[in-house]
Length: 215
Ligand SMILES: CC(C)(COP(=O)(O)OP(=O)(O)OC[C@H]1O[C@@H](n2cnc3c(N)ncnc32)[C@H](O)[C@@H]1OP(=O)(O)O)[C@@H](O)C(=O)NCCC(=O)NCCS
Image (tube, rainbow, N blue to C red; front, top):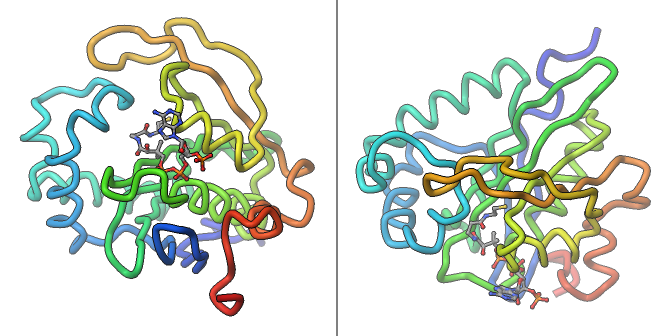
């Protein structure tokens, strides 16, 4: 019989990029302080790309607010609907990567979303994280398609998807409520047939990342 939550829990990596050693592991309750500190500081950096939610930023991103976020993610992961990773760099909490809305049967599809601390911007962390997670999604987790939706203005995120090998599929008009208005989003996607020997291998071969033993 197929496991109820294939590919979960899992630790992915490590992979070395200019910012440091990137590892993905399940989110933990004790990430609260680190999560909150980064998100309160990085409000401007994050808020213009994230879905509109009730309550103000300070409240939603206070350390105590992590408990409900973490327990929701944990419940969804337990039911095989989500793979909620913390991204760590050199062992410290640095952001999140989530594979969500996992649908199985004949679709075997999900979305991928991510954010990384502004202090590490441009250091290759998100690129490494997306490559690691995509390989895992098409390997252990048994998925066939991943989709990322990005505002056309989000140059950094578009660049990440481009570097890793996601394909632009089209523009979703008025797709998501972000900062109080319906925003267009570009849809990027990748299917299992497109990854060849894996996106991590491709990243390493292109010189954008190294495996720890190559250092
Ligand atoms: C998008 C995000 C995750 C990228 O994280 P990161 O770790 O900095 O990403 P990487 O370093 O792997 O790659 C970023 C690439 O974008 C480029 N970039 C960054 N800002 C840019 C900008 N304003 N204009 C053009 N390119 C930009 C970087 O130079 C880098 O490309 P390069 O390797 O060719 O130089 C991060 O900026 C973030 O968390 N943003 C806020 C939340 C968000 O947008 N999440 C995604 C929603 S779809």
